[in-house]
Each structure stands twice: as C-alpha cells, then as structure tokens.
Length: 346
Ligand code: GLN
Image (tube, rainbow, N blue to C red; front, side):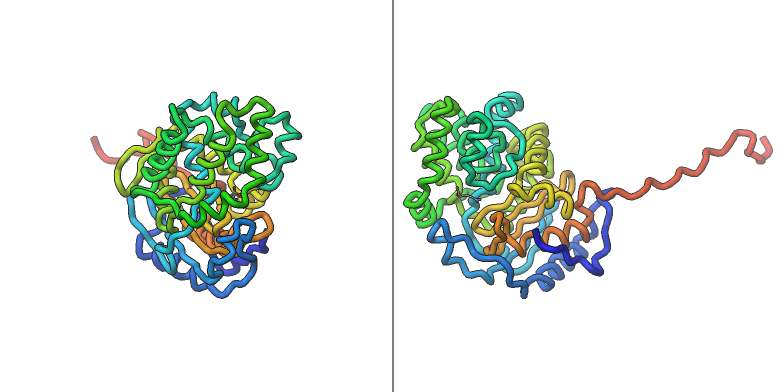
C-alpha cells in the first residue's frame, strides 16, 4: 500500500456528527488540490478499452445521509463501475434470498488472494468465500432469483439504478472489450459449475456479470450509492428504500473485510471505513450513519485499487471523522447534586 502522508491533517473522531457543510466543501477541495499532482500507479490494461482512460481525470464527491453533495474536479465524469458493482449486487441478492443463504452459498471471508484468483477456489473446495472477488461475485450474481437470464439482468440493473437514484446505462464498448478478453472469468464460472456451485448456465452468468461491471457511473453516483448503505438502505436523494437496514449492515461488514481485495486489512488500518474499489479507478467508501465518498482516478496500484482514490479517502476519513475506530473519551459526567446540597430555604 502507499505510504500515508497525512502530516498536518488533524484526526477528527468518529464520535459525533459531520463538520458543517461549508467545511466539508472546503476539505473536499483541499483533498483534490493535495493529490492532483500525484503520479503513481498505472491505468488497467487487461480490459483493452480501459487502457485508453486519461490518467489525469480526478473527481471527488461526498454525499451525506441528509442528501447534501460536496464535490470537486471530474465528479461528473462517467466511467465503468467494474468491481464496485459487486458490493451492490451482493446487497440486492441478500435482500432477495436472505442473510443465511448468502453466507452458506457464497461466504463472507477474505481469500487473501487477488481478485481474479482461480487458486482461491481450488484451496477452498470450490467455495468462493469472498463475494467481492470475481469468483464470489459471479456466484452471487447467479443467485439473483429470476426466471430467465434477461430477467436476472433486468433485476441487477434496476437494483443498481435504485442505489444510484437514476437509470444506469451500459458502456457498450467496455462490455464488448471485456467480453472479447474475459476468458479467465469464463474459466472461473466453469470451475464453479464443476464444483456444483452454479445452478445456472456459466456463460450466461458471466455475460450478466460483465454487463453489471460495464454500467457507467460518476464519482457522484458512487457517493449516492454508498450513502444509501450509510443511511440504513434508504437513498438519501430519492428517499426510496433500496434494501433493508439489516442488509445494508451486512453489506458494510463484508466491505470492511473484503472490499479492497488482499489489501483490505491495510485499508482498514489506515482508513477505517468499509469500501470497494473497481479497476476503472473508482472507489466508494462508506461511513455508517454519516455518508459516503465516491472518488475516481484511473491509475491503480498492483492490487487494482486507485492510488489517488486511496489517498483521498485517507485524508477525508481523517478530516471528516469517518474512521469507525477513531473514538474520543466520553466527557466525565459531573456528579449529580446530593439532596442535602440544597441550601435554599424551603
Ligand atoms: N470486470 C472486471 C473483471 O471481472 C472487474 C474487476 C475489478 O474491478 N477488479 O475482471
């Protein structure tokens, strides 16, 4: 992971509310200015079209649970959601089939291996374990109840759109580019089938999974989607309930342990919020009861996480008081007055 350079950034405790809206605006601008000139990382190229993304694009959005938006830079630039879709499809499938069924059929533990690992499946007898890497996400998408593949795709797209509060569209070029090159995901789906872990056609599930990854979002959309999980499953902009509060809680628990692939432990140690990243350069980071950060910057580290995105989240988590583990001592209550202290005449 990157070395955290947060000199001079005061740590605000999680305890209490977010800073005032104008202070959030200001901190978002500061985060953008602080990291705009950073040049580390490289743009993903294993999906050929992603290699064309301009590395300088950089947008930040913070959406709070009251629906306030605080943004700077390319916060309205559209890019493919990629792996970040895994978080929200997981939530939709939990909502559809329940907490225990997802636990039993996919699992909720980190594999400690890269997102496209085949080895992780082999080591665990075909159990994907982690719904935030490709094997687990393909297995999760397959669990979305539907009478046909078209209906499954419609339910996935509609659910992700409700999280975003607007109709999400596919980037057809990204979809085609990935379908031409996703032999590894097809192999993973076949392996799941071989282990008896897929009750539907493997090629059709990979097609649906590839479509969900090719939906386009902006940093603003990611922040709204994350803020819906922060707000007990209710979209703070549309006011619509997307999933139950229990499902939002379960999803954030999985994001905390698995959302940043094999770097999830380091992420929690440095930044302290549930989060999910995608190879197009997006990250969503969620602070329960407060709001979410959506950030977009295409250059990635070796695990596939946006480098500037991680830095921005480290800065804002600290400055906005988003880190779940950053408490401050409770004020010592002043002792209650004793009745005999009452010196007033009756
Ligand atoms: N669609 C990509 C894949 O399956 C998503 C991976 C990612 O964002 N890490 O490889």
